[in-house]
Amino acid sequence: MNKERKNIGLAILLIFSSLLVCLDRIFWQSSPDILINDKVNIQQSLMQIYHASTLIGIDIFAIALGFLLQGNEDKSWSSAIKYWIYTIFVGTLGLIILTLFSREFSIVDLYNMLFPFIRNTYGILSGIVLGALTLPLFNKGIRKYTKIIELSLLLVIIAPTIFNKDIFGFANGTVFGYTLVNLGFYGNHIKSKLSIKKVVTRIILLLLTNIIVVSLMPEFSKAVHNDLSTAGRFTNSASALLILLAFYVVLLVSKIKVNVKNGYVDFIIYTAWALLVISNNQTLLNKLIEYNHKTAQSVTRWILAKDIKEILWLMLIVILSNFVILGICKLTGISQKISSFYDIKADEKLSQFFYRITNGIKSWLKAHRVYLATITWGYFLAIFSFLMMNTKWTVAPNVDVKYNIFTYTIGVRQAMVLVNTIIFLLFLKFIFSLTNRYWFSTIVTSLFWIIWVVANRIKIGIRDEPILPSELSMIKAWRSLLGMVDGWILLLVVAVIVITIPIIYFLEKKYRLPKQNWYSRVTWLIIIPVIFSSVTYLNHEKSIIHIISGGIGNDPTFYNQLAGAQKNGPTQQFLNNIDVEVMKKPSGYSKERMPKFQE
View (cartoon, rainbow, N blue to C red):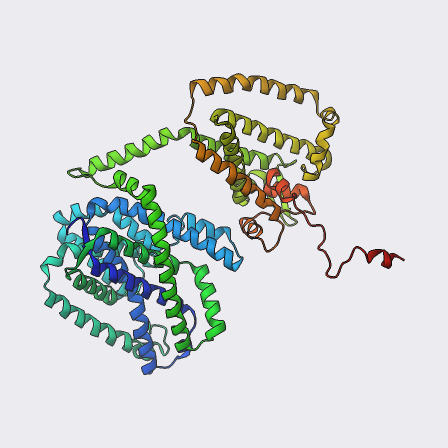
């Protein structure tokens, strides 16, 4: 295949298959009245056939993408990285939009979007990405061990269908996606050996076999089990009959010699990929299903009509969004940077490629070690601020539950620890943008943070509560406040300041880090105050910041400020108290009329 051109037929097949996947996810979860049928009749058989026709979508998608990837082995790694970054971006963007419209937010959904691989959010897509990463190894192995790979693929595909058991863990999606994309690699490898006539013949035979088997299974299930428990044995994406049918359909389309520029095909691939990401967002699906139930009840034809309309609208939105997203990636050069680093160079051996990638990652970590250390330092300071809010080694957030303070902070309140880490880093970034001195900003921010935490700890020791915004006015009486602090603490603070000044000077001279350019500084000086100004809406029930902070786990506990500081950290608890409405204004309230009620 020409390296500069790709098969447009396969790209269009990807779009078609992704639409089938969307339809399968939405329609069958909407509980259409067709599912109420528990009898063995023609309607039951037609339902099984229709269901199989939507389930084949994911098989076609993974196999077709495998065909396209196999033709560009040198770009397999860069493609995998781009797809995964795109997956995280689309998922996170979808979550933000969903939060804006539904006014609901869950930290679990956020973790699923940000860490889709380790949380197996998109099992099939994870398998495809893994397949792309191992494509160079597959191509190397297929030349030496063709028969072994053929038999292995055949065994993995057929065995679960024969024994009706999920032997290879297809249910989690990742293994299934990996198997299908490797089947696509294999198909591209052997496509020249099969004539169109043979491929068409096999498609017809497999199509008829699928129709016959799928439509007759309800009858067999009733006869053997006296119920429909196994009526859908072959009505699933992992059915060997459906996988083989998808394989030969993709093989037939790949033989259509209509190639276009890579850019056009890549745009279609990303569109289809985004549709699969969205179709796996269960929160979004639940909202669509709930809406469809209200407007279409459970009438099959109404639900189907609405689903098709919604999917087409969704595709249009994704296409328009992709113009913007991919355009920005091209302008900023992100895509090109990924390709230049992760593409396998001409005449570069696999061992040399892996050595170069490993060295590149090591070099990046070394170049950014100071910033990574600062993030880690901020995380530990956040933990420190939580631990200092406790007067005992155990904490009881609820009456019947007790935790060790370390377990509670690092485990139960992990999300809020991360929020406090972000607050620390934003403060640091703000001072850095003001001064353009990294070491000065880091050390000063750290000192202020530690002093702030210690001040809260002293206040807890005196009054069993952290510092509140209303108490900032007491700064005017700073002499009286200092009189309440032990002398050794004041001497320690002075000593730390005296020691810190030469340390900052030494670091700024000896280990000076790159400065920010002026437009980056201005941007951050605008963005950070805007972010912190949002705390004035933290306690407004319908505000986005209130919904998100609540979903993350922010629990102000206004009736017990100490418990609030232990749950959220002293900094977040302080922010929680900035805008507190003690009592909602009653409807019809009039200040002028109040004296009349007192008479």
